[in-house]
Length: 227
Length: 227
DNA sequence: CCTGAATCTATTGTCAACAATCTTATTATG
DNA sequence: CATAATAAGATTGTTGACAATAGATTCAGG
Image (cartoon, rainbow over all chains, first blue to last red; front, side):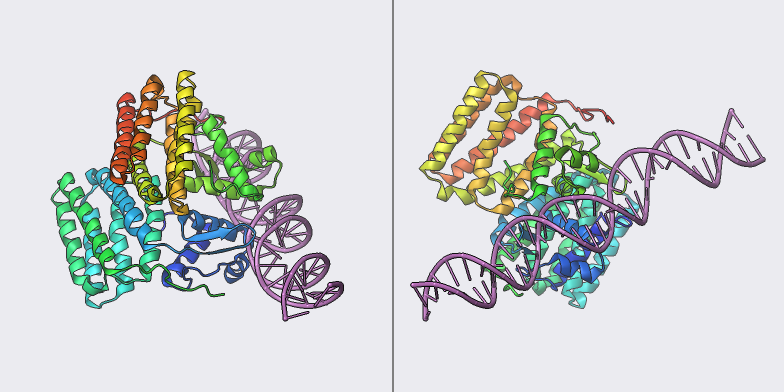
């Protein structure tokens, strides 16, 4: 997932590990995250842990209070549907436009592979896997732009969206339809018409956003603070 | 400017100080930024400096290479006009919609004050000051949303836009016109019609973006690396 | 029993020393 | 002279100890 897992450099490894714990639900919104605890868990000093947590704060996954504590963020439905998703649309369509000219056989093969994984996940009704693959599909678009800033911004935005939707498996109903959507999308990519592809991607993202928004009334407080 | 300048906590103070050096042009795109140097300059240890620099990396102002160096970012014109500005539009219109209902006499007074400062800056043809005031105007919109995440995202996006435009005083030509644009914008705010206000803000931002884009052909390498 | 001051505890903030890594300069070798 | 091994220098990465702060607890005085 993350571009930043360079060799060595504990901060990136730790950031990634904590991210995973958040997305696996080990750490829930509102939960306290303590430097010392993380440091002991990974058997490192607090230095790299602090830097990792700073990264996650900037990504919007953690909220920290000076001299007090830091907790996993609570993202509101409103923020996701009204702000984060529109920004995501901007980012992905921009990346698509930039990357499209350089797309080749290999890349389309990767798309095909992802789609196949998605199909399988939908058959087995494996929601966590399906979500992962879904993200891989869109990540591939973003990566193809080869613009680091775009990738970073996208990750930051998507992390928040993801954190929010983990606690509402809103598209579990119709994984098949959702897979089909991606197949149509991929077909339009293969057509070679950039504008059509961009339009299709935009529609796809907006449609998903709408579907989800309709499904959830307003579940703000997803979890309680546990100590 | 920054919301995070809480009492104490060196990392925020240092981040802000370095930010200022970047925006004042003391540190130019491509310039090397060394932990030890910053630490000595502010007479602190490297710990807080590292964390401050991590913040700036996440904000897109610095780029760091593991075990090697970190430098001030080079932002491309394309990135600004095609990506960052559209994202800015999203953020500000969203903030406007959220904040608008709570706008009161005091807030409008603040807008008036800012506009007056802007008018004066335009008369004295003080471009740095004008830019500052311009930012204050838009920041006020964003702050009025009272949503921290929105504020943070906006700052991060705007910092990059700002870094790019520092080295091309593209709107120096017509500060008066630009001031007038803001007056019109403020008037539409005062009308009380949210949708009209949003539309006006959108047009304003897009217009500025277009004007600027036309003025600059493609000046990518703004400065050289100095050691 | 209440209230506020003093104390204790958990946690984050800061520091200075040491380790690891990359780059560049130097030297040995054919 | 070219080139590969090696050493030196600059810079970032990591660590453990100590300081500062906020919140909870205890306890004295009314």
